[in-house]
Length: 197
Image (cartoon, rainbow, N blue to C red; front, side, top):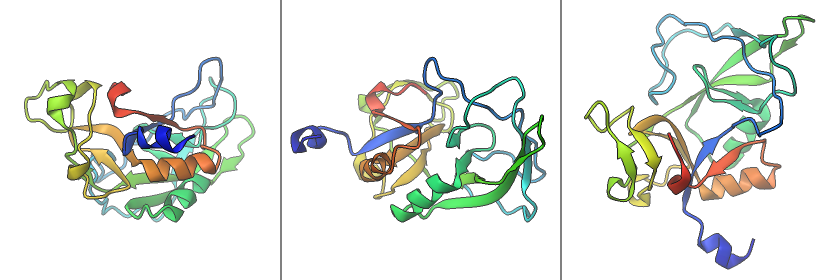
């Protein structure tokens, strides 16, 4: 990438981990409800005692290699991804051990961490975004067909959840580039203007 191409990139991207077209990945069968946790998406510290690993199971109806990140009810990141993020200066991850059991051979995968991204930041530039606000409160569940991030509102954060739409994970360009240099981990980095969420 040339310096000019790099300078034209936005300072922030949206982090996703979609399964590529024509590629199969094994998925998680279901996610348990954990007493004391209403949501993993609100950016607040979880104070429940999770000293025992969270027990999960691979979905027998899916097959293929596992992804490095699952952004579902309980967000999961592979330990290698977590380590690389931490090496990039990401310090706002609350991590919990998991055990993922294969339903056929009963092998247990322990390389994934349940990941609570701490911090919601209201960083959308709504004047430059295309959105709907069904609840009318400007938080949590806004629908975006195109998003603009105001860098002045991010406080220099390297990774955070978007307060206007908490399913959106925002990542700084510098961290994105470091992840790409480390192989990319099968992640997608979507320019905010192209993000639908």
